[in-house]
Image (cartoon, rainbow, N blue to C red; front, side):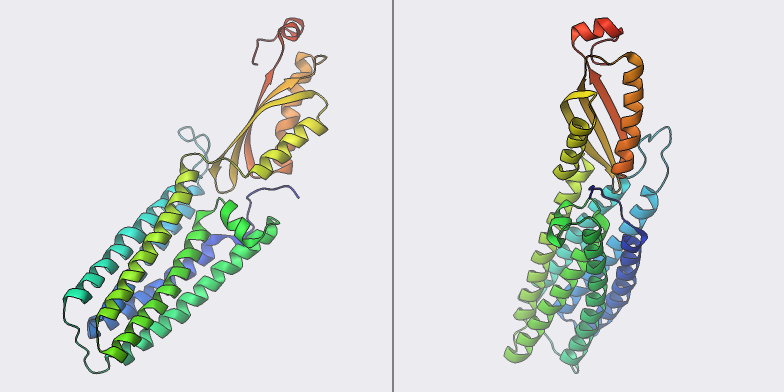
Length: 326
């Protein structure tokens, strides 16, 4: 099966992002109310976590809309990399807003006096339970779509997560997974606080949430940075194209170089420098270039831009009247 990055509507990240946004807005509101009523450091850290996630989903929705714009004179290769830019902002948002505020709450818990008024633990447990269910459902949806994408690309899930050029769905899945783990950490902190009477356990939970968010932000940011600065397509796609050029096109004697770069989630630029057979005429070369463009894009729909540089030896150049490197 030819490898490409196209996604069907069933595996589009838009629905997953919208579900995650709605879930995070509702959960963030509940956590803010709970944190304000009880003053729980773990709950306030989770409030910041959910607010950061809500902001990030807004970034992702913006990226989906802006990256879909058609190419124009100023951006002849389209706006596909908008998806990578806004996803990088989302990763920064996780670190600055979520991890930063969680760290502040951890400091407050360790340096301040914990007060547990009436209903303190019941309120926090209830909100964390609701949040865990809502965020777990959102995570399950994102994972379902990732698995569907992996099946479509004929990859295992882990391989697909590493190879996929779609940062939106990976960001949602990572955020939701971190949210579920964060809710568990906050719950453990609350439980230890209740059992021991020491609010420092909530501070430890808030610190653990901050570390968790830093790890998620750095991982997502590093992945998106590579795409933003021009990451190549997966090696399997490059090798498939190379085999096609060498084994199925008798006009080509050698593939000197084959370069690829992601222009967007479903858009790859491919540039090939090839040595041609000596018997080809100028008309043959023009026809070959046209045929290769059409055939490569037909077999690998994610390859939207194809550039072929036909190199010739000096004696062949003299015969067909070409300039070297044309």
